[in-house]
Structures are given as structure tokens and as C-alpha cells.
Length: 457
Image (cartoon, rainbow, N blue to C red; front, side, top):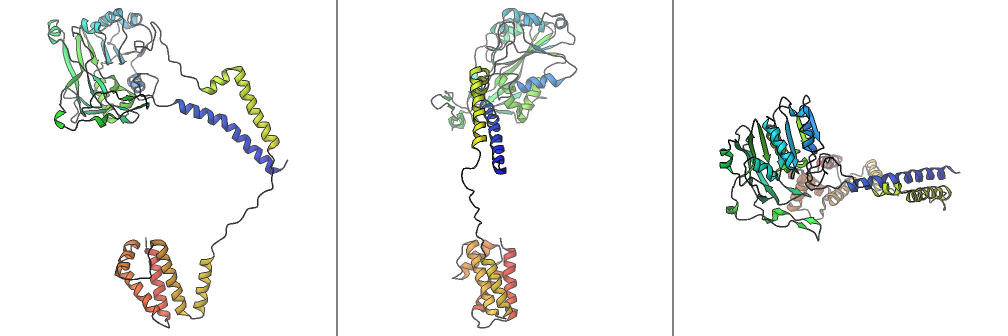
């Protein structure tokens, strides 16, 4: 077998080996599209998920225990090591809405009453819990906008310029619903000797009009910023309370109605990071109970179920015996074809070498000839001709008509002072007007032209 044929076979085999690898990479990257849904998954690094805040709390205090709740609270909170834990523990929930049973709510009330803490970062909280806390019915009150600014009532935690959050989908700013507390029954809270405090709030910034921002026919989101009102008087600085604290027994309930502010997308931003740190500063010392089971639509009663990732087409093919054998047969057939048909079927085409431009070498040779013959006139004209050709090629100027406008433009384009340009052109005119050129004038024009080449831009 010829050496060239053997090399071709090796190259072809390498390409064939890369085909399934490239196909696998393509399928993997294709499945890694960005999902902008608010799913609050702890294992997902996509924008509106809890991967970062989950790992932040998990590694925040190495000397404290981080407990991942996969079962019902009625099973976890009654365990002996949790019931009488000292120092107190913190129950946290980050998501759209906790799916708590009545027994779980009652048990959580007892848990907080003993001096523990419950942190709810949720758009909506079960009505039974609000009723037991004498807070009254909390409906689905929300402000619609794409841009909000938030802050705290505590002067120590306040940020002078507020924390700004822009809701985006597919790199476009869009309007969304920002939940807040509207109908807190303060008289009932006071009557039942509960301490109630508003800890945080937000303002609407762009005053985006509410509309359906998803275009199903084009499968894309519409930019909500285009709906911003032009009339600045419409922008009302109304304060929307989104973060409250309620005392119950020896412990506290904390409610924050904008859980999206603690997702991956905002925690990589400076404002989002600072805001999350200050909100979570309300968490007391002690172990943390992370409730992952209570998310709506993600888990069945009493057990934690991870979502199955959709298999790639190649993994499905290899999982089916008939399709797998067909795939392997195709690869072997391609390999045999390369081996037996790899020999070149035509004569090698000779390489045609590129023609070289020898005009510059010819010009140098002619110039040396003129210099040896003491023909200073022709040599100086040759240098002038090359100089004018340089100007014509580099600066696209015609040196046939030299006037003040030509000198000015050449000076601007080349970066050479107008005085030096005028001096060179004056000597060129002097040489063209003489029958004989002295060696001194030849050296002078040569020096001037070389300085021009060196210093021009």
C-alpha cells in the first residue's frame, strides 16, 4: 500500500471517529438552551432557579447542619433531634407557592412558637397560615412592571440608591407580576398581641402597561420597554410592601413575596447579591431546614421525585437493539468503504507556483545603473516617479496637478507637516526644470523622500 494512500485512510478514520463525538456534542448543546421559566429548581443553573441561593445557604456556616427536606413536614418536624433543637432552627422555602397540608401548617405554627424561625420566599402563602396568624386574607395583589427598585425599612440595611431589578426573558426586558402585601389586618394582629413589622418594599420604575407579552405565532416575547409611558406624571412613586415579619410565640415568621429576586439571574448581579445578603441576614444562628418537597407540581405526597431529563436521540438509538445494530453496521460499512476505496483514482495534479512580482528588483537594478553612470537626472526622476506612485496608491491622490489644496490634503492624510511637503514638492519641481541634476540635489531629494516613507501614516 502506498504511503499517501495509508495517510488518507488514517485521516478518514479520524474524521469518522469524530463524527459521533461531534453529533453527541451538538445534541448536548442543543438541549442546553436557556429556559427562562420560574421553576425554582435547586439543581438547575438556568436564570430563574435556586441553584445559587441553595448552595449559598448550604455552605454559609460549616458548623451548622443543612437539612434537605424530601418528605412531609409532619414526618420531619416531629423528629426528636428537631423538636428540641437548641439553638433554634430556621425553616426556609424558596418558590412560587408552598403546597402545605393543614396538618403541616399547624405543625409549622408549633415549630415557630417554640422559638424557631420560618422563612417564606414565595409569591403566595397558604391562606390557612395567614388566617392562623390573624393577617387576614391575602389575595393575588401584584404590580405589573419590568423594572422595580427595592429597599428596606431598617436604616442599617437600606441602600442609598435602592436596589434595581430588571425582569428579562431572552435578553429582552418584559413586564411581569410583582406580588405585594395589600390587605394586612393590622387591628387583628394587634388585638391578638402579635408583633407585625414591614421590613421591605419596592417601587415600580418604568410603569409598563399590562399586556400579554408572549406571541405564540412567532414563538417569542415582545419587548415590554416599548410600552413605557411617555408622560412622566403617570409614574407614581407608590410603595409596595413585599417583605414582612410576624412574631408568633417565641419565634418569627418572615414572608417575602418576590422569590424571583433570589434566583440565579439576579445573584450574579451586584445589586441582587447585596439585596439577598441583607434579606438573609434576618436568618438567626442555627441549623437550616430547606423545604424542597412542598413545591407545587414537582413532588408527590411523601416523597421527593427528580424530574427526568429528556434523553438525546443518540441515547435512544443505542437503547434499542435493532437501531443500535443498524448504527454500528453503518459505521463499519463506512470504514470498509474508506479502506478499499481510499486509493486516489486520478493522477496527482502538479503544483503551479505563484508568479512573483519582480518589478521592484528591476527598479533597484536600473537605479544602480543610473548611479554608476552618474546619470543623476534619470535617477532622481525614477525616485520621483516611485514617490508619486506611492502617493497615488496609498492616499488615492493624483499628483498631476500640484497646488495648495493638494499639499494640504497630502499633509492631512500622511501626517507630515505642510512645510516638509512643500519643501519636497519644490525640490521635485526644481529637478524637473533642470537639464542636469547635481549629486547634492539628488542626495537631498533621496533623503527627503526616505524620511517621508519612514514618518508617514
